[in-house]
Amino acid sequence: MYTSTFPSKLPSIGTTIFSRMSALAQQHGAINLAQGFPDFPLHPSLMDWVTEGMQKGYNQYSPMPGFLPLREAHAADIHRRTGTIVCPSEEITITCGATEACFTAITTIVQPGDEVILFEPAFDVYLPAIYLAGGIPKSIRLEAPDFDIPWDKVKAALNDSTKLIIVNTPHNPTGKVWQHSDMIALEKLVEDQELYVLSDEVYEHIVFDEHQHHSALEYPGLREKSLVVGSFGKTYHVTGWRIGYCIAPPLLTKEFRKVHQYTTFAAASPFQYAIAKALLETSHMDGLRSFFEAKRNFFLDSIKSTRWMAKPTQGSYFQIVSFENISSLKDVEFSEYLTKEFKLASIPVSVFYQQENAPSLLRFCFAKSDDTLEKAVRLLCHISASL
Ligand SMILES: Cc1ncc(COP(=O)(O)O)c(C=O)c1O
Image 1 (cartoon, rainbow, N blue to C red):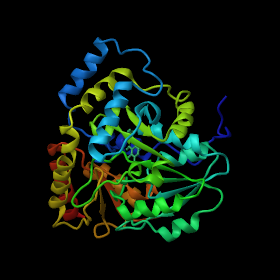
Image 2: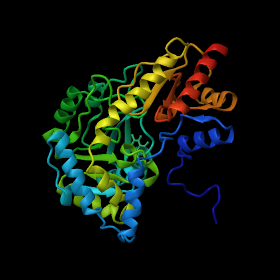
Image 3: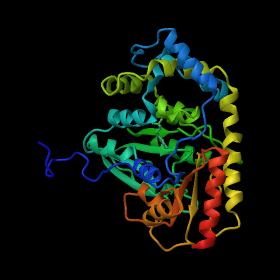
Image 4: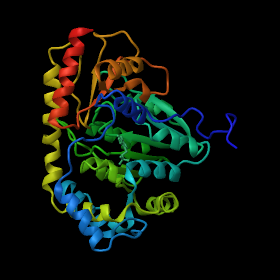
């Protein structure tokens, strides 16, 4: 029987803040700019293609590495956009969302006692997987407002036990996009080392202004040591379909698939069929940047003359906003207060840190319909005027 003395494998981990804030938003009828999912409809063709997939009989297990036409279409799209050649049969594995891809990648690489370098603030999927694998997280703190990578600290953190570095660009929650110079620095760091990289690139298509996404796939020294993770859920506004992927060199992919086959075995067949069709039409992906940039700009312009302070996010669909000039509450309390009293939900940035931290920052997701965003910015202006 379960008792409070049950030896939890994740004693310090609770229900994710995203689920908690979404539940609180629902309970209080608040506008939810907390969890990172779009509230606008998917392209109608996607629905047609799922139905077509089912009608054509794609209702049983897909092959364990993923539906081959999807992997082929993905490889062709990567080649079209970046010139990088990826082998669909030996290097791409389709997973149940990027969440499974991250979990499987960490489980594949990390042995008990291995150290894993990650950057905080950090998205919450990495730590539990590191703990379950018996790894030791070594967090390197990124500081607001620029969240630059402190390469001297990264070098200092490296030792013979370091097995994996986890990179996330464009970054959740800060929107930071790694520059070419950062990728080169990382490439140099892993050179001649028994060291691997998990490159979480789920927001690869969402970068703004002069920023460019630099994938680990494009750097030879990283390509051979990286597991690159992405999410079709993010790209096609269908996070509930749970379709992600991992790209890695054949030897790493072979090991990755050993874990994947006993974790989920395969992702849902009709959804894989639909994404394979969608990838053949390039206009959606090519339009994502301007689509989300308009939303980011609307959000920022609307709060420009308030006491909220924000540096334009470089990528992802998140905007970090400082409430330093509005409240002295801790960010968790302030975020809950706004949800209950002003009916606007956000994510407090301190939850992305392991160490005690009070940055007075909230994360807002602007992957929302114009109507939702208009209501949200009206509330933000009202909050700034009334507190
Ligand atoms: C940085 C990052 N990695 C991974 C994921 C997980 O993506 P998926 O929904 O495909 O599991 C998310 C989702 O929010 C994310 O923000």
